[in-house]
Length: 365
Image (tube, rainbow, N blue to C red):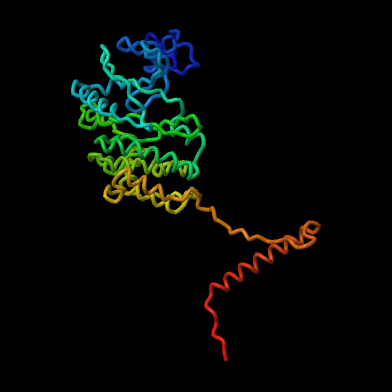
C-alpha cells in the first residue's frame, strides 16, 4: 500500500505517482508494523509481527532482563475506551494468569504503557494455530482429533472450575506444538480477554461491534444473552466439527446470516458431509451443537468422558475375522488352486458357524 503525502489518499503498491496531484507516493506503514522495534515499560522489546486478531495483534518479543523470547499481545486502541475497561481488563487477565495447565499458554506479565497501550506478555509457542493446520491439511482423522481434543477439554475444565469462561474459543486461539516425543500438544490462548470487552463496554455498543467470532458463537451469544461454560462447549462443538469435516457447520458471506443459522438452522451431520466418522463421535459433535444450553453437555469433564468411549477407528473400518487354513500339498506350486481352496474353506467355515447358531430342526421318529 502506498500513500500520497499531500491528499493522503492510498493506492496499490504498484502505483508511484498520485493521479490527483502528481505527488510521489510513499510506502505506508501499517499499525501492526509501527509497533515493531518499540520497548514496553522498559522490559519487553517488540521484535516482529506474528498475527492479528479481533481484539488486537500478537508479536514476537524479548524480555530484555532475562533475554528470553516471549509473545506479546497488544489490545486495539479503539477498544480501550475508559478507565473502567482498563481495570476490567487487568482484573480478568490477572485471574487468567493464575491458570496453571499444560494446555494453557502461560501469562508472564500484563500492563499499560504511558501512551495507554494495553499489553500481555506470555509464553511463546513454537507451532501453528489449529486453524492454520485445518486450512493446510483439511479434515483430521478421528483418532488424532479425539487425542488433541481431550487436552483442550482438560484445559477448559480447569478454567471453568476457577469460574473463568473463555467466550471466544476458536481454532485461531488454539496453538498446536509438539513435545519431545513428537506428540501434538494444544495450547489455549486469550482467557479472560473476551469478558473485558463485553457489550456493556461503550466502545462496543456505540460502534455496533460483534463480540466473539460469528462462526463459533452459541445461540445465546447470538441473541446477546450472557455466556456461561455451556457457551464454551458449543464453540468446542463447532471446532470439533471443523476438525472432522474440514469446514464449519454454518457459513455465509453475511455475518447476520451466520448468526441466524446458529439460532435456527440444525447442523448437517458430519457424515452427511463426507466425514466418515464413528456414529458415537458424530453424536458427541451434534450434542455440543444443540441450540438450548440445557441440551448440551453441562461441563467440559462430561464432554471429555463422552470422548473417552468413542472408538478410535473411522466409520468404514470393519474387523474381518481371519480364518487359518492349512494349505494342502502342492499349494506352493499351484497358487490359484490354493486361493480357491482357502476361499472354499472360509465359506464352509462361515456356513457351519451360521448353521450352528440356528436352533435344530425337530427330527421325525
